[in-house]
Length: 370
Image (cartoon, rainbow, N blue to C red; front, side):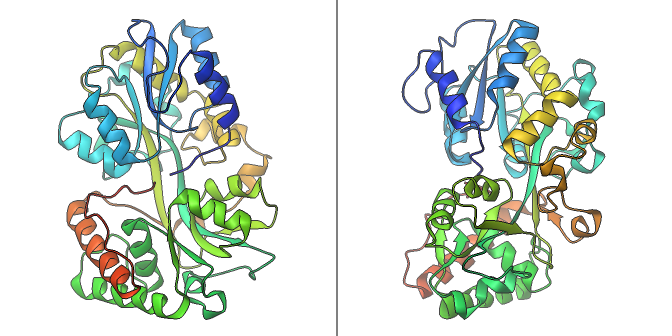
């Protein structure tokens, strides 16, 4: 899922807290004035953390994870220690359904008025009882302009000219979703005939281009090296890869794309509920949200922050901040029938892997993005 731009800064911050080793709580963790944030690796900026501490006197110590499965494991193993999590919508839905999240107190979140209504009250958390949106983006196509003409359609991932150099995300909800969109179906469909068509379409892709099934890290590395010429990718990861190779470009296909939202939430057993609300409200401040968007290169769901980005490169990037006509062709992952859809999509990708000579997947509940 997205490893944005502040790796070195955040690394310095974590090391300065006196910790070594991945997935360990940075710092003592027992201090009542220290907030424990469970975050995707490199997904918060050091200036935001420093500013929050300066304004509130509350330190933020980060527990980094790479995948949502890993995040769930840490949350389970550190009950009563974590104060804030960052997670995608479907995971927020599942945690809310299992009563693992605290209901938010809007009286402690005055900056919630800054949020764009399009990213609130979504199917995974109606009325935002448990979460607030942090950053959002799409699953799009990234490509090497020195190897591939600018793509226009998901069909370009089926083009035999790119055989052996096509990347597909190793995530059923993304890979099957792209086939569904290409066929003119909703990526949220559970119609049997449409799912069968998607399976056939992906098997056709295996026969025509022998795609590489890759994690987002592998896709970025492949685009940088040229081993991958065209691939599915998450919107903020493509610009990140382009920092290492100026030939990398990205585009939302003409058929549209899946949209996703990453969110802040507070575990129900957090020992610092008030401090957690202060952190959420701080992150919804217009100036902080604008700087996070600009430096991490993901879109902000914050209307007031977007106003501050007028004239910036990121706001002018139509694949990061799509215009309304493009947004109309895109669709959020719906929480309704999510478990059934995941199971069907896993079944499809396992069948496709077997045809391509690969091993079936592990059969576990997949992350939306890894």
